[in-house]
Length: 201
Image (cartoon, one colour):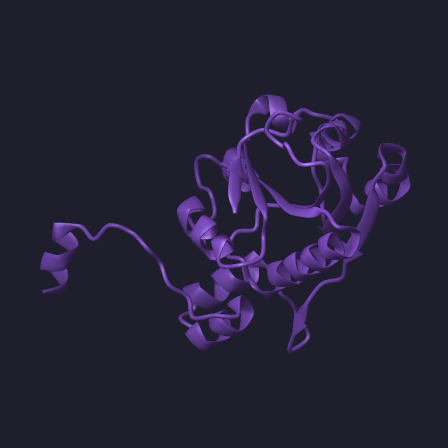
């Protein structure tokens, strides 16, 4: 899996991509369904699979004083994605300039990078004021040469799987529930501090 940092023809050197776009924090079973559909579509049209994600995550950018806790660091997301069939990961630096791109400008970036198809979730939003929605892509995507596939929510026990639901399960100590939502046991990788070892000791 290659890591790229820009959506432009020089960085995205292959002739065509099927792209899925989002924060992908946690890589839960809903995210896995988006990836599955991306891989299937890329294989069907002979293109490469591409994930476009952001660092920092948009919700961290907009809530700098008290951001929601992450389920996965970027390094952990990269490690988990490397075990999938994903061909390319584009991690865009989320800045004021990026957040102020209109829907048409954002779609133009994808087009110039060689994106041919877009696979997004039912609640997808991007661009200035969130104007690049699923409805926008359905209506305007063909103007940019995009096939657009919108993936319905994944439900477990009648609840829509999402990163917020995983955080709530972990905060409540419901590890089996979190594992069902993630499709794996939750683990966190980090540096153990000596003070923590002493406190546990």
